[in-house]
Image (cartoon, rainbow, N blue to C red):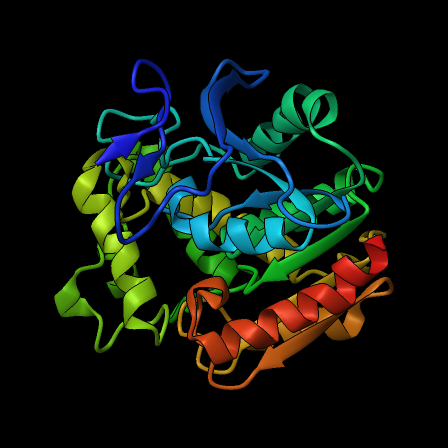
Length: 323
């Protein structure tokens, strides 16, 4: 295993998941004093088209997107990304760092706003495009509402707008988690099958991707750097996320989004609700949605055929707009 900047923040470089050349890795501190790991890559080939700000889903880490980062760079984009608080190479927030935790979903906005002000604006070439997956997709929608001038366009992969919550629903689950937090149980794990750590044995029935090689890349990275792993979310995280998803489902949410937006979903996604993506997409004034047949949750980690459709949509929506 090789790393970048072994004395400070590092990026894990292994044979099955090679590090794209030209990386710069570092830490920055959010306005509420949380240390986050970030990385930047200059553009690769061709005309300069701006910078992709890539924000990940829950449990994810920079290394998981090396292949996708290389794909963006081949299109002429620089790429800037970071690990959310509580995961990857960023500060863990509670004593059990293996659990996914956040006090408020608003804290992810703090992460993004700090990254935009401290790294993206001063160090990365404009224009800026936001690409978000899953939980990062919901955080990206909130960014599009809070500051419509921050990014020129937003491209989302399977945004986390709703998840299975039987029997209580989003609001009921949020209330239950809030009550549990009030009684001191906020740091207790509250997971489901989809939150288990990946392994070779879990591939056959996994909800994330139909591509074994890309699935095993993440397994290999975590075997080389187990400190990057995050398992089940805490009760407090569940409360925060459910409140944010309930807000996204509320009347008036769609019309508050004034940034050009494209959301992609998969017909076989068992992690987040593709129906919720479709419902929001139909209400958008400045955006739309597209559903990819046969795709599971992690669209950027799917088979070549599905990834081809994802990047065709990306090129039509962002690459061609930046020419």
